[in-house]
Length: 284
Picture: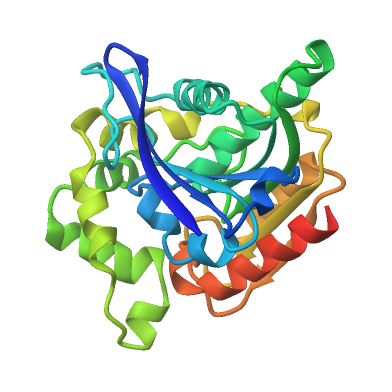
């Protein structure tokens, strides 16, 4: 397996960091789609670091840092971190890397971004046969395409969730995961460092306005196979909300529930997530 890091200049103030992995030998040259991993609000490409090695043994993968997170840079502007802006970055990265076929995998906020990218790619393929082709969409503990408006007190709590390492650690262990609380396992260092390391506008965007964006009008364009991986102990995107607000908009979606996992299943259950991804790729 080969791995490389590439920083892609999209705009003068937007540079997107990507982790590019290829399977051993020349498997990636035989038409395998490239899996593109999109992280949650507070994450980075590292969010997928327990899943990516298991999948990239067989398929080429790209894990990116959204603008303002990880090693990516973003504008010093309050409103520059919308779902639409993040989706545009993903589409530009796919074009810059000259990827022919793509399977999108999004987690939480990244799943909302993935839904919009998927809609754009399906619509674009119908107009332009030279455009990158979307082969599948995998939504992990997904934020739905519909708007979510929090009560003022909850919104204020989220705005300060990643203010410092103490608050970020509490959120990671007690809200976003289960295994590090119930099994007394040590939370990987990158989880908290990613949360506190985002720039101020990226950290503010999701609770301030991005979760309230409505992309539901676009998802009807998605015509590819869809896999939804919900988590049984997810208190952020519980199964009933995933089913009513998201699955109902993808009639052909297959839904799987990960037992004993919280919201961040790539951390709570990386082997199970990788197993479902590989199965989806093989039977797509």
